[in-house]
Amino acid sequence: MAVISSEVRPVNRPAGRHALVTRAVSRTTVLAASAAGFAFAFVAAYLLFVRTEAGRGVENGVVRSAQSAAHVVEWAQPLRQTDQVVVLGGIALLIVVIALLRRRLALGVTALALLAAPLVVAQLLKLYVLDRPTTGDRFGVASHNSFPSGHASAAMAMLVALAIVLPRRFRLPTLAVGGIGVAWVSAAAVALGWHRLSDTVGACLLVAAVTCAGAAVASARRPDGDRVPLLPVLSGLFAPVALVLVGYAVLATATSGAAQFVAAMVLAALSAMAVVLLLTGPLRRVTFDPAESRVRRVRGRQAS
Image (cartoon, rainbow, N blue to C red; front, side, top):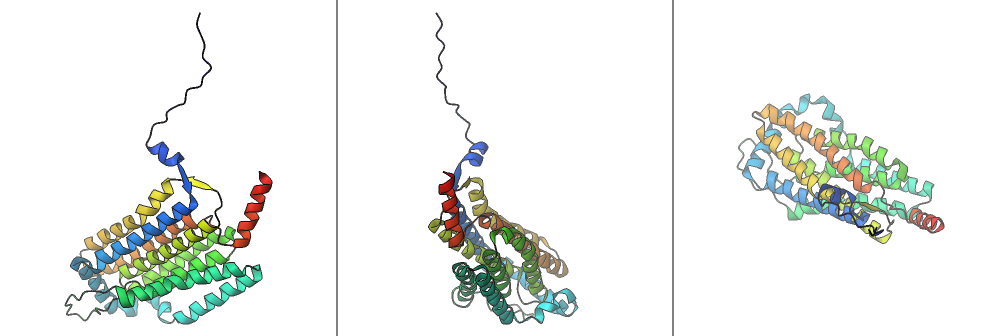
């Protein structure tokens, strides 16, 4: 007599691509991985472009071309007329006003902290930690360290701070539209001969790293309970450094000074946009507002 078993045997799913997609991690883990990835890419940009003779040589060629063509790059001239301190002060005031109108004072403080922190870190690194070896350039290219760029750092930090203080439903549109502004500042700084490509890329990466680190702290203190796929962790770790390697390879293959100049401007703009897009994913659902976090917890308890 045949015996029919009702036992359901577990299905062993093959490890591999499906495991990476289905396995989930906390949002804090994704943010920490992204912070590490941006920081590693920042170091890679410094080592490749600043600490190697080949990197310094090609970027000095870009600076020479920019200095000879600065008077004809009309689209970059508005940056020359802009007072960065005034703009920073205006954005800081706007953040305070938005926080007061929304009655989210703690959120405003967080946004101001994430505005100031990367700028302070950038200046400390540029002035006291990082240096640029001299290359004996006879064409008068400045040899003082300009990595990372203060202009690109400020543009990126202002964008992030505004995206945080605004209601969360506006975060993605703000980053998407504001990324165009950061791209313009980065390209204009290169076009005017103020900064090298690596300076602008490093600035954007540094702000992204500090922002993700701060967001990881906020997420750990106010976990939302959501689980996200493991794939964003791998993307956060490796995509930023891949961006740096591609930029270095493209700039190094330019054969003439004019080609290097154009390539550096285009790469500065595209790299800034890419960093903003890479930052958008980890920040998309982070709760920086303590009041919003309390509301979500109450709704979660009511739903359960």
